[in-house]
Image (cartoon, rainbow, N blue to C red; front, side):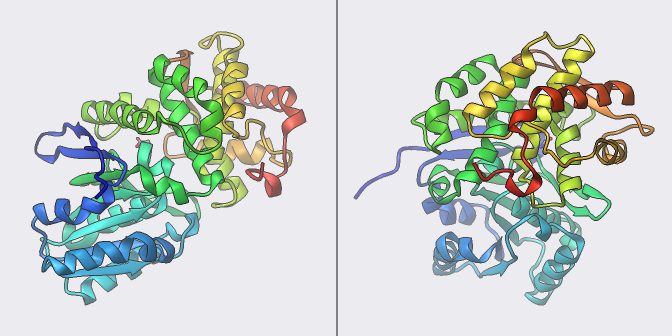
Amino acid sequence: METNPSPLRLHVQLGERSYPILIGSGVLSSASEHLRALQPSQVVLVTHPRLAEWYGEPLRHSLEQEGIPAYMLTVPPGERTKRWEVVGRLLRQMAQLALDRRCIVVALGGGVIGDLAGFVAACYLRGVRYVQIPTTLLAQVDSSVGGKTGVNLPEGKNLVGAFHQPVLVLIDTDTLKTLSRRHFRAGLAEVLKYGIIADETLWRLVNAEANSLRQCHSTHLAEIIYRCCEIKANIVSEDETEQGVRAILNFGHTVGHALEAVAGYGRLLHGEAVSIGMVSAALVGEATGVTPAGTAEEIARALRALGLPVALPRDVEFDGLLAVMARDKKARDGQVRFVLIERIGQARLPVAVNEKEVLHALMMHRERFHREAMSWKTVGQS
Ligand code: GLY
């Protein structure tokens, strides 16, 4: 029988709320053992229908075989699922199943499932345990680690939520084989982000592997995911609730979140929006003298090589974008804030940037990258 190599292991150090992250091929096959070790009274898997069939049912079955009552709750895939009404529905289903305080919620899916199921776990009976089993690259390198949970409101992204840490994160790199190219590449934007903000060696590795990564594979994939999780784990251990250094993880997100909101959630994938937003942020940095000239072009080159969009969509209106940025939960007194980089591998805590400078950077962005600008409809279809 073929055996999977031992997974790579990391720890998010948060005192009594510390938890391990296991990364490797075939990790899912031992998920029921890891869950059993946590001694749950019941397990509820939150996922979407296709993942329920591929991974959820086998896991539910092995939990049942071990005598652990296990249930599956499914929601439709996509960002539109991350809303208040769906939280209410899931909470009621959990109450109808009479899940008690020792139950464990398992978030099996991408960032949407993780944020939603994590939030449900944070609310149900004033908080129950949950385990993250991320199945997209974006969720594996970012959203499954660090305990940010929540949902969107029509007024803005992630406006409701809670910090609620998982008790375990299981990252099975095999699940990425069934991910669409578009979703895989969107995750690469967050991977590159870690290199840009904190690790020049990772930046160089991702650039060297760009051809393979663009085709959704790399012999260095587990190592790359490990390094991203390690950076995130260190940052979260130092600043769980984003009072300081954790904010650097939002590099590219000021414009990125605004693009997502203006486009309508789900039209532009989060990673695609962050990809474009990182170029904007580098241009803001160049315009304000924090970032060396030419860095935005260097970042755009790396993103393009990974198959990611870098230009502002043709039909985006700056007024709309600025209005959303000023409402963003990271804005203060209506002042837009940006994480800027001092060089590749070194980010600075967010600073307020005045509207004139943001507008100037957006105009530069449009001017320099106009040839590759797409309309909303074609974004992500390369
Ligand atoms: N995704 C950014 C954070 O978890 O802080």
